Image 1 (cartoon, rainbow over the protein chains, first blue to last red):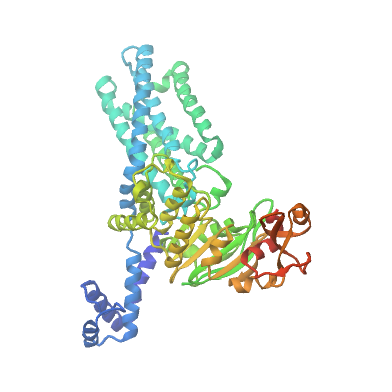
Image 2: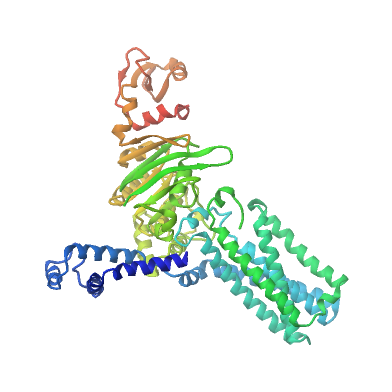
Length: 296
Length: 290
């Protein structure tokens, strides 16, 4: 779509390039218009028209230039980056506040549990805590970015210029920025609080985050809209319980160190996660979903 | 500008919601009339580009709207039949949010919002949460968002639902003025709303366009079939069962004035009445009058 837009953009400018002489004259007319000359406006003054005649611009060219300028004005819309920034106030703050509150609460509970169970943040305790924290951060993104269904906003959002796909992408970006900040904060605090090496700390943040993100994306696709709240309420505790049980019965998973193998695993998970997020954004914009009432 | 709906069909699992509909919309106000379930909302969603037809296409000045994509949505405004708001939004927040979604620049957003709040008499409530507004005010907020990008094509699905008579008159006047040089398509059950302002109307039944044209052209099928008479009030129930009564007015004493549809005079003393769009609607949708 972007390529098409670029092609059409070139074509729009290319319209000027088809005939060298026409291009030059049209460019002069548009330049005069943008400099404040009223020659191209139908209601322009007689004096302005006379000055236009003075540069030998035929009436049909004036009309074409006026139409082109009207089209430009209409196409003068904000870009995607500005769109994301404009959404900060309505989406970004909400998402970040929910993430911060949820993860602060979970951190408090988790810290008490893991410190209590494993002493003053042993290697295993810290690893389990970071796994749980990052998995929770990844899973929370999905319900936070899936807004609009319950509030009957979807049709109006879908019919707008940016539509649901780009709105979903903006929300994913905002949630991703929040996750990145929280993961960095968790990394910093873990590095200070424990004796684990930084590579291992990054491993226990990155791999569970990406793994839970891939799981969450798959569930997001399968969960019917009506069941989504209950579904997420069931999935999150299940994943956290899985981490606790793994800590008890497969403790070796939480005594890993950073290695080339884990780098490959992370790279694969990152590719799958990125693809899942891209598909989720595209799926959000697929028409007829509002009729079917499916989530994602 | 011209919007061409060409052989559009949309099927759902159990029925054909839109069945081979072709219509050419030119600048002015168009009314889309039809009973519940006749396919109006589905057709409007297809024109809005938020639903894909199974067959056929919608063209804007000869270019499929699918191809136009964002450029079509730039010149398009849509008010769905059922729409909602995020609970924390005030009127201004909502309009600014929708303006961002429509890609409007900040300065243009501020200007347009100020103009629309004034035109739709929402200035006093701009900082109020939408959830606390009356139904009519919420509907006006929805209309405001549809007009934000100063669209060339405006699709309104039941726009006057919930508005009081004064608000409906103001809205009709606003639309009439707005529709100069633009395409406005209104779907409604409130026939007078389109009768007064729509230059042309289309009537949908079971997914098909069964009639289209100006009001004068549309009412031709019921010309000579609309009657009015005075009847005893005690016999009203009997007449309502046996005749297709369009309007009933209890007069003083024991008489009532009825307006009914029939091929020929069915009650002695009936006089022919001037047909209206509402008569055509009830002629085509007899179940709507029961």
